[in-house]
Length: 265
Image 1 (cartoon, rainbow, N blue to C red):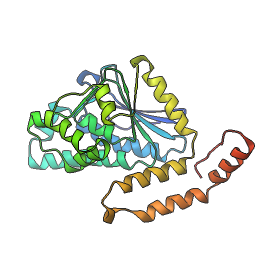
Image 2: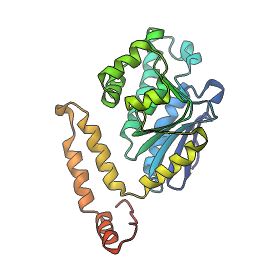
Image 3: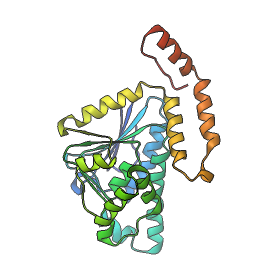
């Protein structure tokens, strides 16, 4: 895959997996404005690539997934009202494209997952973390007003009480606490993390893409207010499964007692 974005974002494809790598290890993979801008383009490439079945997000190095936004840029990139609007638009587009990606997304959390990094992880479908990783949102230590959409995503994931605890205390939480909250799905030893995520992604890759897409859409719409749900798209995607070649292949494979070979159509 060609790369036409900042060198701080790496996009690779391997065995049905699209890897989006935050490559700013000197700053614990803090996300620069250029990285926010690159995220939607990388996701778009992966979604359009029929060979990619699962998208995995990870941080470069061994210390961090993403330790928030790159604060060193704030004076230049968020120093005026107009600059703040441009910066916020870039971050919101990145979050939206991630949430609405038509393929499964996994955050492979390898270390610090703080602030905007946690928001990125929460925007993924699944979160698999290494032992020793830490999670937190320090907004209350900085005096920041946190976006309603981000708060609601966290409420939908861990519930109102844990959301309040995360924001009120502004402290970091370990993997045991994060697992108890439901903030992450799985914890693995550090040395096993990437291999485990690869294996997990391959399991997902072997299942019917249209079914997964329909379920992802249904879950997303179920979390919206009823009057805002796009039920037409939900029903359309369910019908697409039932009329697909993959549905026929799934039935044949079951009868023939062999693994199905799904094509996503």
